[in-house]
Image (tube, rainbow, N blue to C red; front, top):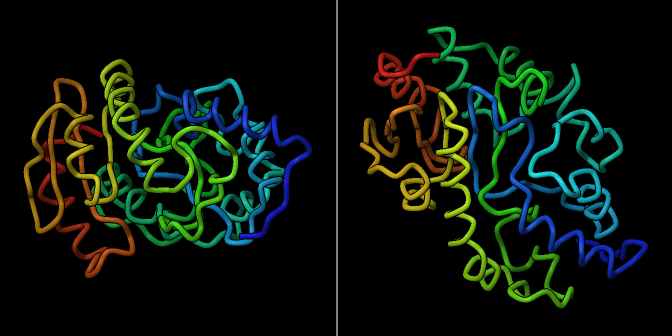
Length: 250
Protein backbone atom coordinates (compact mmCIF):
# COMPACT_ATOMS: atom_id res chain seq x y z
CA UNK A 1 0.00 0.00 0.00
CA UNK A 2 1.47 3.32 -1.03
CA UNK A 3 2.09 6.08 1.47
CA UNK A 4 0.41 9.33 0.52
CA UNK A 5 -0.82 11.68 3.20
CA UNK A 6 -4.11 13.53 2.75
CA UNK A 7 -4.09 17.33 2.83
CA UNK A 8 -4.22 17.41 6.62
CA UNK A 9 -3.01 14.59 8.84
CA UNK A 10 -5.16 15.94 11.64
CA UNK A 11 -8.20 16.00 9.35
CA UNK A 12 -7.69 12.35 8.42
CA UNK A 13 -7.30 11.42 12.07
CA UNK A 14 -10.62 13.10 12.89
CA UNK A 15 -12.33 11.49 9.89
CA UNK A 16 -11.08 8.08 11.00
CA UNK A 17 -12.20 8.53 14.61
CA UNK A 18 -15.66 9.65 13.51
CA UNK A 19 -15.99 6.70 11.14
CA UNK A 20 -15.12 4.24 13.91
CA UNK A 21 -17.87 5.67 16.10
CA UNK A 22 -20.64 6.18 13.58
CA UNK A 23 -20.29 4.57 10.15
CA UNK A 24 -22.05 1.30 9.25
CA UNK A 25 -22.32 0.90 5.50
CA UNK A 26 -24.03 1.73 2.23
CA UNK A 27 -27.73 2.15 1.61
CA UNK A 28 -30.61 2.68 4.02
CA UNK A 29 -31.27 1.03 7.37
CA UNK A 30 -34.85 0.74 6.07
CA UNK A 31 -33.76 -1.64 3.31
CA UNK A 32 -35.62 -4.95 3.03
CA UNK A 33 -32.36 -6.94 3.12
CA UNK A 34 -29.07 -6.33 4.88
CA UNK A 35 -25.82 -7.92 3.70
CA UNK A 36 -23.62 -8.01 6.80
CA UNK A 37 -19.88 -8.54 6.48
CA UNK A 38 -16.70 -8.00 8.43
CA UNK A 39 -15.31 -4.91 6.71
CA UNK A 40 -15.20 -2.96 3.48
CA UNK A 41 -12.53 -3.87 0.96
CA UNK A 42 -10.06 -1.50 -0.64
CA UNK A 43 -8.06 -1.19 -3.84
CA UNK A 44 -4.59 -2.70 -3.45
CA UNK A 45 -2.90 0.54 -4.54
CA UNK A 46 -5.13 2.92 -2.57
CA UNK A 47 -3.40 5.67 -0.60
CA UNK A 48 -4.29 7.57 2.55
CA UNK A 49 -5.46 10.41 0.32
CA UNK A 50 -7.88 8.01 -1.38
CA UNK A 51 -9.14 6.89 2.02
CA UNK A 52 -9.67 10.49 3.12
CA UNK A 53 -11.76 11.07 -0.01
CA UNK A 54 -13.88 8.01 0.83
CA UNK A 55 -14.26 9.03 4.46
CA UNK A 56 -15.33 12.59 3.59
CA UNK A 57 -18.30 11.33 1.57
CA UNK A 58 -19.70 9.51 4.60
CA UNK A 59 -18.58 11.99 7.26
CA UNK A 60 -21.28 12.64 9.84
CA UNK A 61 -23.58 9.92 8.48
CA UNK A 62 -24.17 6.37 9.74
CA UNK A 63 -24.72 5.22 6.15
CA UNK A 64 -24.27 6.69 2.71
CA UNK A 65 -25.54 5.83 -0.75
CA UNK A 66 -23.45 3.30 -2.65
CA UNK A 67 -23.67 5.35 -5.84
CA UNK A 68 -24.65 8.99 -5.30
CA UNK A 69 -21.72 11.06 -4.09
CA UNK A 70 -19.26 8.19 -4.52
CA UNK A 71 -18.50 8.85 -8.18
CA UNK A 72 -15.04 10.32 -7.55
CA UNK A 73 -13.92 7.87 -4.87
CA UNK A 74 -10.90 5.98 -6.13
CA UNK A 75 -11.70 2.53 -7.51
CA UNK A 76 -15.31 2.56 -6.38
CA UNK A 77 -17.17 3.10 -9.63
CA UNK A 78 -15.76 0.10 -11.46
CA UNK A 79 -18.25 -2.17 -9.68
CA UNK A 80 -21.28 -0.04 -10.52
CA UNK A 81 -21.76 0.18 -14.28
CA UNK A 82 -23.04 -1.96 -17.15
CA UNK A 83 -19.58 -3.37 -17.84
CA UNK A 84 -18.78 -4.24 -14.21
CA UNK A 85 -17.49 -7.64 -13.19
CA UNK A 86 -19.30 -9.47 -10.42
CA UNK A 87 -17.53 -8.50 -7.21
CA UNK A 88 -16.25 -11.65 -5.45
CA UNK A 89 -17.28 -10.58 -1.94
CA UNK A 90 -20.87 -9.80 -2.88
CA UNK A 91 -21.62 -12.52 -5.43
CA UNK A 92 -22.92 -15.14 -2.99
CA UNK A 93 -24.97 -12.80 -0.76
CA UNK A 94 -26.59 -11.26 -3.85
CA UNK A 95 -27.17 -14.67 -5.44
CA UNK A 96 -28.79 -15.98 -2.25
CA UNK A 97 -31.03 -12.93 -1.96
CA UNK A 98 -32.13 -13.19 -5.60
CA UNK A 99 -32.77 -16.94 -5.31
CA UNK A 100 -35.00 -16.36 -2.30
CA UNK A 101 -36.75 -13.51 -4.10
CA UNK A 102 -37.41 -15.13 -7.50
CA UNK A 103 -37.45 -18.79 -6.48
CA UNK A 104 -34.70 -20.05 -8.76
CA UNK A 105 -31.02 -19.55 -9.48
CA UNK A 106 -30.32 -16.08 -10.89
CA UNK A 107 -28.16 -15.63 -13.95
CA UNK A 108 -24.72 -14.07 -13.72
CA UNK A 109 -26.18 -11.02 -15.47
CA UNK A 110 -28.92 -10.70 -12.84
CA UNK A 111 -26.33 -10.87 -10.06
CA UNK A 112 -24.18 -8.26 -11.80
CA UNK A 113 -27.13 -5.96 -12.49
CA UNK A 114 -28.24 -6.02 -8.87
CA UNK A 115 -24.71 -5.18 -7.80
CA UNK A 116 -24.30 -2.43 -10.38
CA UNK A 117 -27.66 -0.70 -10.08
CA UNK A 118 -29.51 -1.70 -6.87
CA UNK A 119 -27.05 -2.65 -4.14
CA UNK A 120 -26.81 0.00 -1.46
CA UNK A 121 -29.28 2.35 -3.15
CA UNK A 122 -30.59 4.42 -0.26
CA UNK A 123 -33.68 5.50 -2.19
CA UNK A 124 -34.72 2.08 -3.50
CA UNK A 125 -34.22 0.54 -0.03
CA UNK A 126 -33.93 -2.98 -1.40
CA UNK A 127 -30.52 -4.10 -0.13
CA UNK A 128 -27.84 -2.42 1.96
CA UNK A 129 -24.33 -3.44 2.95
CA UNK A 130 -23.41 -3.34 6.64
CA UNK A 131 -19.85 -3.67 7.95
CA UNK A 132 -19.12 -4.89 11.46
CA UNK A 133 -15.78 -3.08 11.45
CA UNK A 134 -15.65 0.42 9.96
CA UNK A 135 -12.17 0.85 8.44
CA UNK A 136 -11.60 -0.39 4.87
CA UNK A 137 -8.67 -2.68 4.21
CA UNK A 138 -7.30 -4.44 1.17
CA UNK A 139 -6.85 -7.70 3.09
CA UNK A 140 -7.36 -8.90 6.65
CA UNK A 141 -3.60 -8.92 7.26
CA UNK A 142 -1.25 -6.89 9.42
CA UNK A 143 0.91 -6.13 6.38
CA UNK A 144 -1.90 -4.21 4.68
CA UNK A 145 -2.89 -2.27 7.82
CA UNK A 146 -2.83 1.47 6.99
CA UNK A 147 -3.83 3.10 10.24
CA UNK A 148 -0.99 2.31 12.63
CA UNK A 149 0.76 5.69 12.43
CA UNK A 150 -2.27 7.90 13.09
CA UNK A 151 -1.80 8.06 16.84
CA UNK A 152 -5.36 6.87 17.51
CA UNK A 153 -5.76 4.55 20.51
CA UNK A 154 -6.31 0.95 19.46
CA UNK A 155 -5.04 1.31 15.89
CA UNK A 156 -1.34 0.52 16.26
CA UNK A 157 -1.93 -2.91 14.70
CA UNK A 158 -4.85 -4.66 13.08
CA UNK A 159 -5.10 -7.16 15.93
CA UNK A 160 -5.19 -4.32 18.47
CA UNK A 161 -7.95 -2.66 16.43
CA UNK A 162 -10.09 -5.80 16.52
CA UNK A 163 -9.48 -6.29 20.25
CA UNK A 164 -10.22 -2.65 21.06
CA UNK A 165 -13.30 -1.99 18.97
CA UNK A 166 -15.06 -5.21 17.94
CA UNK A 167 -17.06 -5.92 21.08
CA UNK A 168 -18.53 -2.42 21.14
CA UNK A 169 -19.31 -2.58 17.43
CA UNK A 170 -21.12 -5.91 17.96
CA UNK A 171 -23.18 -4.33 20.73
CA UNK A 172 -24.10 -1.32 18.60
CA UNK A 173 -24.88 -3.46 15.56
CA UNK A 174 -27.21 -5.57 17.67
CA UNK A 175 -29.05 -2.39 18.68
CA UNK A 176 -29.33 -1.23 15.07
CA UNK A 177 -30.45 -4.67 13.91
CA UNK A 178 -33.26 -4.91 16.45
CA UNK A 179 -34.28 -1.28 15.99
CA UNK A 180 -34.61 -1.37 12.20
CA UNK A 181 -35.65 -5.02 11.85
CA UNK A 182 -34.84 -5.85 8.22
CA UNK A 183 -36.96 -8.64 6.78
CA UNK A 184 -33.87 -10.58 5.70
CA UNK A 185 -30.24 -10.43 6.85
CA UNK A 186 -27.47 -12.33 5.09
CA UNK A 187 -24.28 -12.54 7.14
CA UNK A 188 -21.18 -13.71 5.30
CA UNK A 189 -18.09 -15.12 7.04
CA UNK A 190 -18.03 -18.07 9.41
CA UNK A 191 -15.01 -16.61 11.22
CA UNK A 192 -17.42 -14.25 12.96
CA UNK A 193 -20.23 -16.75 13.54
CA UNK A 194 -20.32 -16.06 17.28
CA UNK A 195 -20.53 -12.32 16.60
CA UNK A 196 -23.40 -12.80 14.16
CA UNK A 197 -25.20 -14.90 16.78
CA UNK A 198 -24.70 -12.10 19.31
CA UNK A 199 -26.14 -9.57 16.86
CA UNK A 200 -29.14 -11.79 16.09
CA UNK A 201 -29.71 -12.74 19.72
CA UNK A 202 -30.38 -16.40 18.91
CA UNK A 203 -28.32 -19.51 18.24
CA UNK A 204 -28.19 -20.22 14.49
CA UNK A 205 -29.14 -23.68 13.24
CA UNK A 206 -26.78 -25.39 10.80
CA UNK A 207 -28.95 -26.26 7.78
CA UNK A 208 -26.29 -27.53 5.40
CA UNK A 209 -22.56 -27.87 6.04
CA UNK A 210 -21.22 -24.46 7.05
CA UNK A 211 -24.49 -22.61 6.38
CA UNK A 212 -26.83 -21.47 9.13
CA UNK A 213 -30.29 -20.05 9.68
CA UNK A 214 -31.97 -18.20 12.54
CA UNK A 215 -35.15 -16.20 12.86
CA UNK A 216 -36.24 -13.43 15.19
CA UNK A 217 -39.79 -12.12 15.43
CA UNK A 218 -39.10 -9.83 12.48
CA UNK A 219 -35.99 -11.01 10.61
CA UNK A 220 -34.94 -14.17 8.80
CA UNK A 221 -31.17 -14.57 9.12
CA UNK A 222 -28.87 -16.56 6.85
CA UNK A 223 -25.18 -17.08 7.61
CA UNK A 224 -22.95 -18.26 4.78
CA UNK A 225 -19.19 -18.60 4.21
CA UNK A 226 -17.16 -15.94 2.45
CA UNK A 227 -16.67 -16.41 -1.27
CA UNK A 228 -13.01 -17.39 -0.81
CA UNK A 229 -13.86 -20.19 1.62
CA UNK A 230 -12.73 -23.64 0.52
CA UNK A 231 -15.46 -25.51 -1.33
CA UNK A 232 -17.89 -22.60 -1.53
CA UNK A 233 -20.01 -22.73 -4.68
CA UNK A 234 -23.34 -21.71 -6.16
CA UNK A 235 -24.43 -25.36 -5.97
CA UNK A 236 -23.92 -25.40 -2.21
CA UNK A 237 -25.54 -21.99 -1.84
CA UNK A 238 -28.69 -22.94 -3.73
CA UNK A 239 -29.00 -26.23 -1.84
CA UNK A 240 -29.09 -24.17 1.34
CA UNK A 241 -31.49 -21.64 -0.20
CA UNK A 242 -33.93 -24.35 -1.20
CA UNK A 243 -34.01 -25.69 2.35
CA UNK A 244 -34.73 -22.32 3.99
CA UNK A 245 -36.82 -20.42 1.45
CA UNK A 246 -40.08 -21.75 2.87
CA UNK A 247 -39.18 -20.02 6.13
CA UNK A 248 -38.49 -16.65 4.48
CA UNK A 249 -40.99 -14.21 3.04
CA UNK A 250 -39.25 -12.26 0.27
